[in-house]
Image 1 (spheres, helix red, strand yellow):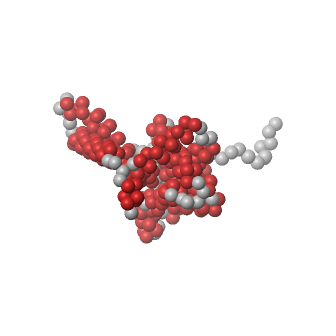
Image 2: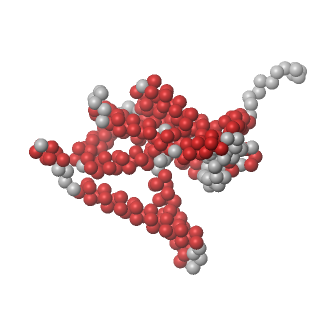
Image 3: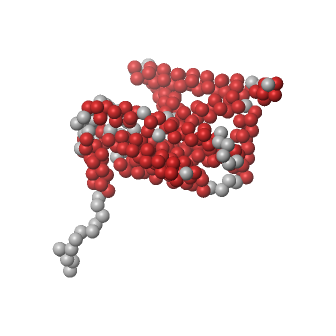
Length: 299
């Protein structure tokens, strides 16, 4: 016979723990206008949340400490790791059953802070947090070089990059945890993978491109870094616009165009124009001979 008076050591319900942590972080919401508005601003300030950490990539690329080639290969590893981690996170958001955000779920008991819009991010799944993915990924990369600065980076990302997003109802704590695990895990794999002959050849192609066409290389490197910081928002906006335009085209041809169709076509056309301009600029810079070396010799 079982002892009815025995203590219950059953594991707590995960959803209950998730909600309890959400309520604990959100406990001060809608009580102080100034505090709420500061956190609202911080919730939109990707650079302050952890975007500034991506300057580490540029610092390491041009670092004179250690062998330059090894430093630059490490930068390529980091960039590839973050891109793969973010791709996995986006695929999970699209392919897994959608999870509503706390500020859109009346059953979550969430308190909306002052200055926050209840309609923000309404059609996006919250699991996992892609902000947590990229910020913890870059923090993990810094950790590989310095335990002190990597630890401080992780602390900054958690306090200023993740907690505000829970406070504002953009994510459940489990969304943040999953994003952090994905970011750190993929970055650890990126560092652990041995550099194969194919990887060395690819790195050699990148370095050769940098030497032959520095203007094109560094222009696109800046754009790539910016897109990492903003989670490829521009790319996703262009993609959504093009997809919406393609979906709206048959309806427009059938004479069923609406105001939504027109806006979708405009967004798609704008995206295509931006993409065409970027490709044309890249092609022009790539074909232009590099005179920097000759100029340097003359001086």
